[in-house]
Image (cartoon, rainbow, N blue to C red; front, side, top):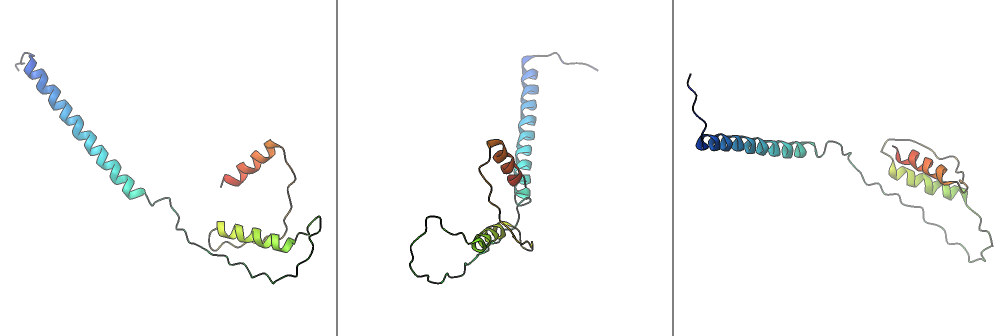
Length: 121
């Protein structure tokens, strides 16, 4: 077996062949990544449906003076909260809001913990 002496021409040829192979491999990788993105772009998305909640028309009330502390209609509050939750949940999920309890002013660590629980799902 005879070996050729290294000269500038052979070195440049080996360098050029190596660069062409690397560029070809990178091009193939780019196309593979683009194909994977196209194939998986709809994989994690849920089908969203738009639900409309139409409130019942309120009867016309006579004009009266507003007391210092307005009365709260708990039934109306529960209906509004239930409608808001229903809009955010998936179809087919059944639930009932039976009681609403106001949360008093809480320290910052308690608010942070509550937000962490709400947004963890």
